Image (tube, rainbow, N blue to C red; front, side):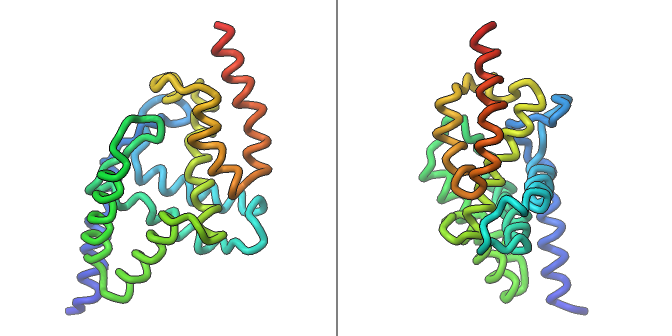
Length: 195
C-alpha cells in the first residue's frame, strides 16, 4: 500500500467533480454550456497555442499548470460568471477554503506546490500569472465571438463593460491578441446595436 498514491488518487477522483460544474459560457457551436473541466483544458490549450504572444519572461509550462489548477476550487465554490452579480469577498473566501480542502487531499509536498501555483495565479503579479489570467479571460471572448454573443447577450454586456472587465486583463498579458480581437468585438457590438 502507498499512502502517497492513495492521496494522489483521492485528489484525482475529487477533481473529476469539476466536470459537473457548469459555466455561463456556451461551446463555440452554442449547443450547450461548457463545464469547468472543459474550460480548464481549453484555456491550457489556448496558452500553448498562443505561447508566441507571451512576454519573454513567461514560462508556458508553468502557465499551463496554473490553468489546469485555477478552477479546481469551483468544485466547492461554484462558478461565478465575470458578468454576473456576486459578492466578491464571499467568493474569494469560499475559493480559499476550497483550495485548502482540495489541495489538502494531496501529499504534503504536492499540496504546497499546487496551492502555491493557485495562489500565484490568483495574485496575478508574476509574468506567468499575468499571462495565465489574460488567457483565462480571453477564452470566453473567443467562444462568445464564435457562438453569436452567448453570455454577452444573456447578461446584457456592453462593449465598454467587456473592455473594463475583460479587456484590461487580456491586454496586460497578451496585448497583441487583444488588439486583434477588438476589431471583431467592435464589429459584433456594432451589429447588435444596429438590429
